[in-house]
View: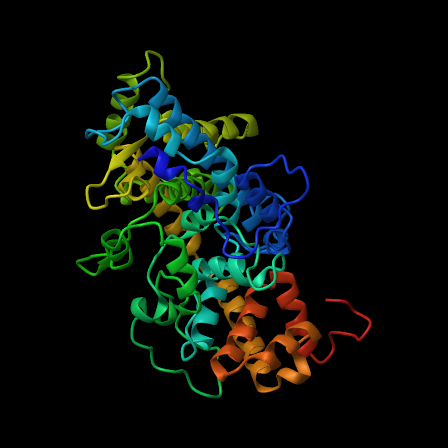
Length: 468
């Protein structure tokens, strides 16, 4: 089985692999380098993570968040590999199907998992969730929009490294970023009622929240990614079950590690930003944490778990209290401890649903730390994401994106830049033309979108001498 996994299929590229003379790097190192040097990655420095850009140069952007996800993903992988090396009994709560040394070789290479972490948010448009909802609304009749699906599109089509193949990454990297292996057409819900023609931007965000999926334009790419798996595995992966009203997605091993790191960074690092901005304070944190289920009993469960492994430990309540210390060193140490506790409680789970170990083996965060992460995430949602201040900015971004899309689709020859217009004119049908406009807007930074909007719509702003 290990030999099968080490076959060249996971290092294959869809397009021609351009090998330079005396190339010393592995395929994973080349994947990593291509992502670091691509324009889509650099643009993440000017895309909203949670808090709006321009409030301060301290708060995280999509770029710094992606770098943190890459770092935490690597730390989780290293920790799991260490447990395998020690043949630790803590590794898994069920018997694993393969010996530890084989599973260790299945874990992603450090450059590979770092590349997956860096790439996981490439497809997110300007203005965060507001921009994503706006583009999904604008594209509702033309295949929709979803940020994770756009990531796959950027990596395999839009970036200009190998013509027609984007960055032309390896199969395993693409498998790692495929979080939702279902096409938009099968995952989407019925269209919401259209707004009034006079106010096309006045829409309810929840009506146009995109489903978790990949875009139908990438069906051929996904077929190629999944080619090494058996028909049974492919069928189960692409037809996830629905429990209640929730779609349950299966992930590959690398994806599960990246997803864990993403969740950890979102709930802990974004909490740090919210505390610095005073959106989360000592006074409102504890009621919100208790409402999320952070009871005294729950905190005692965490302390009991930690004490069973370590003789001397700081109570988790003390760590959470230190998040609000006036001493920045104490605050940073508390953030670091929360991240560390999550990393050292990551384990490997065996899912008997799949035959292939890259699908049957997944990383997970054991209890009660998984619940701690979820409760901190709920605090962020309650006190930050749903706060009027953030929602106002999100709505503003939503309007900017919709009005830009409407202007560009009405008169593309007048407003599209030359290179984008060339691609638009080469499109063979209306849906492909709309996708070109969508790709153009999705690739904008927050600042670029705002400046273009002002140039087009604001009478006293914009000049032919001002560069976007």
